[in-house]
Amino acid sequence: MIRFLSVALLTLTTSSALADCYVVGNLKGKGFRAAENWQLGDDGLSNQQFIIEIYGQTAKVSPNDMNCRPGLPNGVICKSSKGGLSALETWTVYPEDNTVIFTKVRSGLGFFDGAMMFKGDILKRCGNDALIN
Figure (cartoon, rainbow, N blue to C red):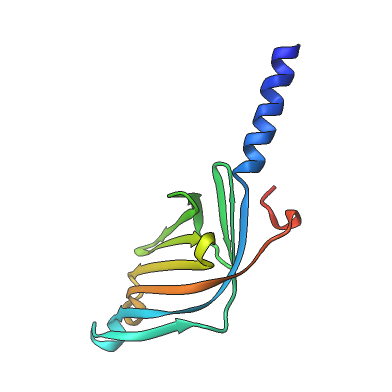
């Protein structure tokens, strides 16, 4: 019984240590897009905010309907593939620098195909109520 309680306590302590949640925004960067004849151009999502949640082996980015998983430390990898359309995103937060890096590649969307890379700000950390259940 003591062994079971010790393992359960260790699991709860470890799980909460792996929980992170960030609100990010002010994303600015560059992109190559089919719509711009694959020329490098300025891009940004400065008016949009995202919530990045990392909880053990579970991760989520909102708003986003892609399947996401934890990646590198403080990182999330999201992917989607349906009917010839595909997208891949990476999100990496650097809390010590208050910075987030976001990349996205899309294919099968014609005009919207391309790759983008953004740098943004960690606006705040989320409360426990924002964590994935």
